[in-house]
Length: 588
Ligand SMILES: Nc1ncnc2c1ncn2[C@@H]1O[C@H](COP(=O)(O)OP(=O)(O)OP(=O)(O)O)[C@@H](O)[C@H]1O
Image (cartoon, rainbow, N blue to C red; front, side, top):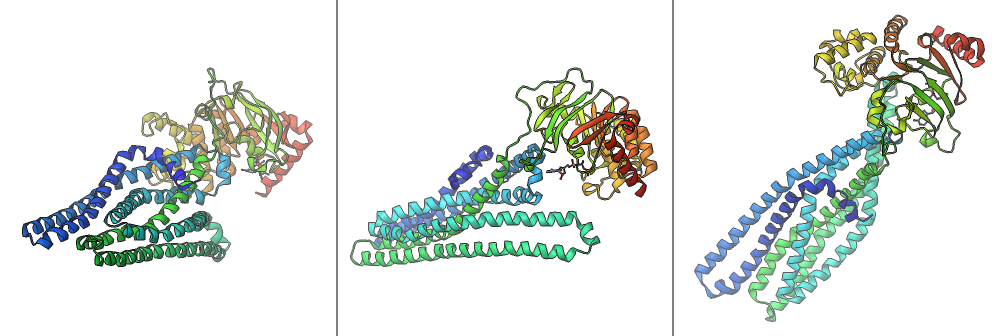
């Protein structure tokens, strides 16, 4: 995709800032015109009053040059004022849209993408776009226009001056083209590598306890150093490409102006150029020097911005595969019946491999608690991701109250079905905010929210939260790391209880609790589960005991459904599973 087309994709974000950007470009152009007028005034002064000795006119010419200088400075100041705030506004909008997109993209996308890559796009690439909009874009436009106007003036004084100037700039175009080819690749590589580096940092900070416990800090450091070294090498190659371009943009204008100077003197000696025009030409040379030498830097910034834009739009272009239906249905009389009908599933990155679920048929009656047991890796957790459409089934359907979940709006679906995952993720926020996450309908500080919160903490046996330094308003730290595993799990359970859904999906929700606390949670959960349909992945007999019926997941299907006693009697695989989990419990 061409650079112009890539950058044009930023237009929707820039639209609200367009008046200020155009204003900035206009005053910038005004500043350039003022700087180019100075040589013209000088030409008039040298050929006119200075030659004739008219003092009044000399004074006027001096004042005019001074005034033009002041106007130029003022307009440069205004240009900065005009452009700074809208660039920050555009950065804000792109970042906002990027974050929104990350929220919309399916779990399958997040499984595939490294978090450091997303982070570096969110922070570094969007920052590069802002820098470009804040000064690169307008400076490039103005400097190119200044050079064009300057060349036209050179042609006006004498065609030979203009021709020499244009001929000398040809190497710049050739170098610029070759630079784009090479630098474009390096720029992309370096930005990708800095994403990899961010991932490495993110992973090692996240896993710092494991690294320390296994004494592998130096190993992580050497891996990090290798990646940092790769990035450094790419940056060095980038710097050497940039150095070459910048050098050529410093050197060629000097050579061009030198050649013009010799031509100008020759023309003046032969009476083809007035002294005033020659003098003005020197002034013009000084005025064109900076716009020309800055082009190299601005060009490299342009290519960096194009790469940054491509990287940001990689994410915007990733398909959102799990969306609201075109004509959503709604459940008018919620009963809480959850049904898996011939459900087949494989993970998107396992296409071609045999399906993980090969036809799951299971109906949870309203209010029923159903436990799912199966061998490790049999797909129990996978099964819990399908009702809320974290992944879509690849065959068959999941139905809630007789409606295919794909026909419901996601907001309605996720309000009706609540999930607690095996790995309890908490956010850096207060206990209150974490537990009431699913209750957007409540003002978190209202008495009603207080009641919901107290009830949920009670069911999850998470009374410890009220004893924290600031009670339920205590910040629980990054991902709740300051809490124990069992405490986090109880808060995650409280969160799904507080959401009060019609159907609860719990993935081994009590695995980190000690036996006594588990018994208390179970007793409280039974109260809740009496009216709520629940699907519980069970790894322990005590969890199975909470269920009305148990489903055996075997070979990608539900092989049998029944009460614990029935299954013990009739199903060989169930007996085997219960025996293995019993042993696991004994060992624990
Ligand atoms: N996001 C994913 N992408 C690709 N494959 C996955 C993904 N998550 C799980 N799998 C694979 O799917 C299979 C089933 O995993 P799942 O977590 O559903 O098993 P499980 O029955 O819950 O196991 P356990 O009892 O050990 O928790 C495993 O082979 C796993 O490697």
